[in-house]
Image (cartoon, rainbow, N blue to C red; front, side, top):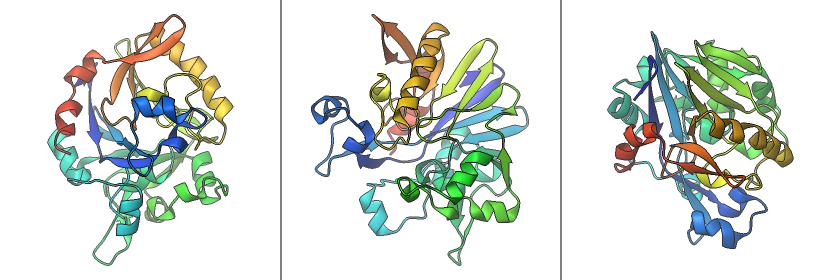
Length: 293
């Protein structure tokens, strides 16, 4: 789809599952299960909606999904349901392949956002999945990934970034930076101290990717915060800042983990916020591509 003078596409990686209680924190199961029905292991369906942006000569990918470097044990644990490779999805939806990507941006380095950064070669060694790309991540997030807390250590796998550091493709950035004209990458504390969100502004319109600040449409209410968040009160404060602005300025919003609708508009109704389908969401290729999974 066109977004000003840029082209934007949603590239779904694949479905996977995480525990519903962990995904909704203090929200009671009898409430969250109405909008995210759990399976027999209490896991809910999720996707990884990566953002492709064609900006002049650059072909940019924001987050890379869960990747293919998983044993059968972990595929079963996370309910990873891959029907086609990320490269095939990228080619079908955006008309380009992994070799054509020039910039990869990681909002953070958790395995479900950076797992597709690398792939295993014939010798079983992790190597860049996007061989011609610069990989951008905040310096603070890189430092945290190298020395995570006990609480979030399980979300970081060094094979997703160390090979890129060794190859010289990983470039550490400030907490807020411009990756391309009109594309700002901004840090919002809550999920951790260094997770970033993407803000694309073209021709008076804004597309905002919430990453794990608001992972699905169901997480829009202020108090619906993931149990995975290290700083949940700061997540709430960030939502209180961003959601009214999104509604007021008619942003197109990206919900990275939503399994049904990647894009939507925020509307305010009697002081509460909810998501409606955006015009871009109705037109983008996500709806059709989702049926192939």
